[in-house]
Every structure is written in C-alpha cells, then in structure tokens.
Image (cartoon, rainbow, N blue to C red):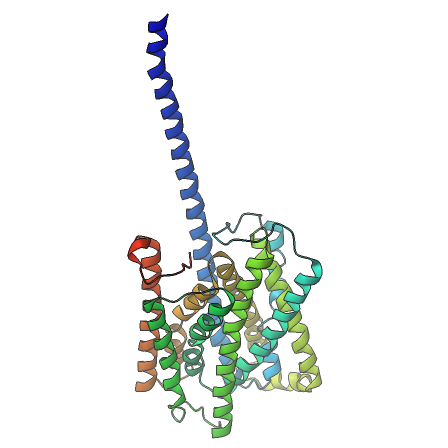
Length: 376
C-alpha cells in the first residue's frame, strides 16, 4: 500500500505541474490576444486621424481659395459633422477599446453635473481653437498653417508634463526642440508665405492666431487625457462617441451664436452663388469637410483614451508632409527653401519621437536609464 502511494505522488505532482503550465499558457495567450486587439484599435484610430485631418485641412483651404469668406462658417463645419456618428451607438460594444495600463482612483461613476461641466468646457475651448485656425487658414497658405501646427507636439508635451505627469527622455526633448525650430523658421519667412491680396497685417494676424490655436489645441488634448483617466471608469468606444458628440454639440452651438451675431449668415446665399466651383461644389466642400473633421475627432479621442495625449499629437504630426506637398499642386503654394528645411526638421523630430517609442516597447526597461515614465 505504501509502495502504491509512493508511486502515485510523482504522478500527482506531474499532473499539477501540467495544469499550472496549461494555466500559464492560457494567460499568456489571453494577454497576447488583448494586446493584439488593442493595437488594432490604435491602428484604426491612427487611420481615422490621419485621413480625416489631411482631407479636412485641404477642403478647408479650398473653401477660402474659391471664394469663401466666412470665418464663422469655416469654424462651424469643423464640428457640425457629429450627427453622422449617431448610428455608431447602435454598433458600439463595451470592449471595442481595450483597457490600458491607466490607473483609476475609483470605480464610482462621475456625476452627470461633472461630466456636463467637462463637455461644456471642452466644447467652448474647441470653438475658440477652431476659430483661431480658421483665421490662419484664411490669411496663410495651407502649407504654412500645417507646418506651424506641428509645434502642437511641443505645447502638448509642456501641458502634459504638469497635467499628466509626462516625463521626458533625450529623444523626446530632441523631438520637441526640432518641431519648435521648424515652426519658428516660418515666422521669419512670412514674405514668401503671404497669399495674393493678403496684407502684412492680416498675414501677421494669421500667424498669431495659428500659433495660439496650436497652443490651445495642445492644452485641450492634455486636458482630455486628464479628464478621461480621472473620470472614465469603463473604457469603451461609447466613451469616445460621448466625448466627441457632446463636445461638438457645445462647440457648434457656441459657433452658431457667433455666426448669427456677426451677421455672416446674411451673406451665405450670396457666397454660395459666387463660389468659384458652383453651388453644388460649395455644399459638397462644406459637407465633406464636416464629415472629415468628425472622423478626425474619433481617431484623436480614441488615441488619447487608449494611449496618451502626447502620442495622439505625435501621430497628428505624422501627417505633416502630406498636406504641404499636396497643396503645392492643388493650390500652387510656394515650397521654398525655408519650408523644405522646416519640413525636414519636423519629420526628423517625429522620427526621434517614434524611436523613443521603439525603445519603450522593445528594449528592456533597465537599458532605458533616461526613461522615467512610459506612454504605453
């Protein structure tokens, strides 16, 4: 009997070892699946952001280039496309966006009043930022506006440092410096960046408004990350829809007040009649610009929720070369030496940022002695 027990002990130990091994393999498989799904979500958000941003920026410039004059209308179409997102509520699932590493202090749902305050604040900020960009779009070439907007990464990094405890490595600092220099170069190149018929005063106003809009955009994205990680308990695609829809609704309402108060609505019919591409094209430009901006916001908020505000801004900078190059052929924008240098510096800055993400993801943490915190 004793021999039988002695013989069974190794068998039981072996079975326990196999069960533990199977359980470990199952956990590893599940973690790999979650990470795989997360990166699919991130990739989709990147595609939405880049496509929406590039097409919307080009159509926004086309509106002014062919006879559009209303800055309020140009701002309104940046947010008025949110109703097309309503059907997505029917297909959204609780886990379309996977939970990430972010810690949340409480599982308690935030109050309706708190969420309402956040949405209203973000909506009003978005309206102001959109108007500043519209001024820049009216008085500056689209290539110049896009290159200045690349400095949003520097502004966002600055605000994220205080709001989201974003830490810096040498590669990220190098990226921020290069992107800042890239934008500063354009300030000293304003003579070649002036559109026909635009005065020096209006050109300067365009530069100032674009820089202020870029700074405000960097602050807004950092605040979105802060609010989402403090208030959101369950991360899902519905959270992204809620933020985009409510923020756009508030922004559109505020802009409509300005649109009617300024009297711009009185010239809407005449502007449509005189539009260089015709009435139908006028409406199509407005409609598709609104749709593209809605797609952009879905991608941007999704990246903020899944990764970080700084990563979202860096991906936005990835679309930097697209718009200026297309603008040279579509709008006959000048691509002089300063702009080429500015573009090269901006691309170099972005590559430096991406390389840091490579180090964060694939190199052992012990080798990243300069790294204090991670984006992933």
